[in-house]
Image (spheres, rainbow, N blue to C red):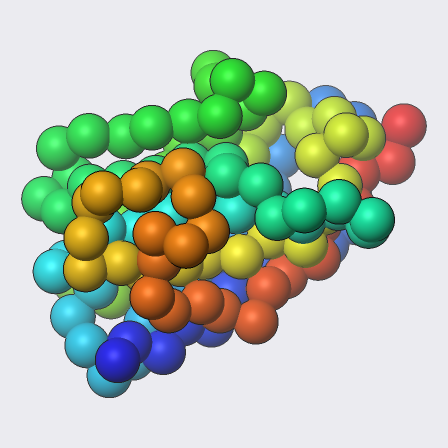
Length: 124
């Protein structure tokens, strides 16, 4: 099973950018279908973005489309989430997740391994 560790979160102002990283160990990240999710206080964990094996397909939640970009660096065994034009409603704990299946890319139950999360706070 792959182990995932997120980093890069922080406190920023509306309109700023952040890049989250998700470093993998134990397995090669390129063989997994990858996703980013987020969870705001009092809310369920929600889908943000997904990246297929081979980086062929990217999928985004409507709320982040055009502002966020998911990508992978296989040489570094790391997944990224570039977040631009951040809004206060983007405030949440962000999690990366890995799956050996692409059956449920937008669902938490579609993923086998999760990181511990990194906090992103966007002030207005």
